[in-house]
Length: 241
Length: 270
Image 1 (spheres, chains in turn purple, blue):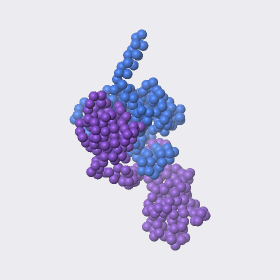
Image 2 (cartoon, rainbow over the protein chains, first blue to last red):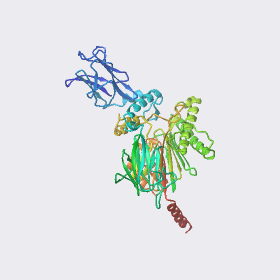
Image 3 (cartoon, each protein chain N blue to C red):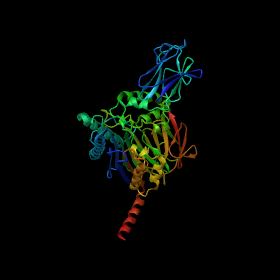
Image 4 (cartoon, each protein chain N blue to C red):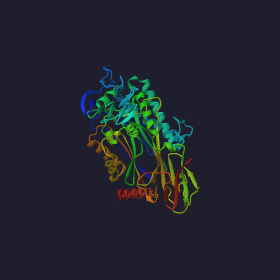
């Protein structure tokens, strides 16, 4: 069972088991975790389960709630986290957990946890929002308005510059190639570029391409300005406006 | 380039019925695998319906370009990949409508992973936590991102992969075929190379057998069918907690397979 452990200057003051009900923290005596200190607002913060995760939420307190020393309005909690309210510490102990989160999700018709089940719409929506929020911080977003391009520096190709569009870009002699290589003994598929959620990856074809002079091993993420060598063709990978 | 295919589905050691299901259309080079959910025998109904719908829709589209497209097409992928996604959108609708008209089947659904090969080009589409892996030149890569609660949390960064593997929440899906009126389908494309192995599998394999074990089994088996059987055996030896299904594709050089066939023919006639 997971619990919140209230400590003050190292001394253990109180332990509160976590259930499905939110735990409130504040100066008023009717809180689940009352803290008698003027730096603490009457109803300061609460901890509850949402979409299968433990969340701390500051209730517009005057002096704020801190998670691992960072002021937060709302944040996901994990085992070992410390919430700081005033000078009181609240430790999140989930070492014996799972039961809690399982309970929360068990409202679905399937009673057994190892039975496959689907997250209900509301929980899914919250998760997607969370994912979207983190996506904004992902590597691709600053380049959202930038178009990835390949500029031919040397070698025989059908164009001098290519825009990369779509999930798969083939470099080779093949008809399906976006970057058509010309000349004798040119492989049908010399290399390929795959678009993933977080960027563009170069993979081998019938040849092993090089990035900045080094042969790739498996799929390798491309960075702005990388020099790609495929056989006798050299390409510059660039993000452009 | 030629594709050798092998497949196997098994009850496992714990479950009483097999809710997994797969189908292969060798002439279309279409491979579909599904893991059903939803108590009693309803998971089986869902996975079978999903697989059959995908197969039928793709066959129809192959015969008539006028076959309607379901769901939104993406400009990022080929017509064929969009067709595969369309088949899954239709499967979603069929399973959802079947469940809606049979109260006892409420909530049934399925995962699906499908691969379609045209010359060297591979289209992948999936929903749920059934996976596609590509083993190329000794390194194995998961081509699909699981639509499960733990996997989404790992992607968002609030769970480590180790925590995810240990979590009891692994069976909670964030997307499935047939549980809602519409579904988002993920797609991917690759160029296949001679020597590649492609593996489609249900979570009954990946929860029981580690990636290195999977890779070494693929690399050391004599044929795609032998790989498929050895992978299922491994899952069962390691506990067989869930139904296990695998489809193994091995891309071989045409000439090689011709000589192999010649050898077999010689052996049989000699």
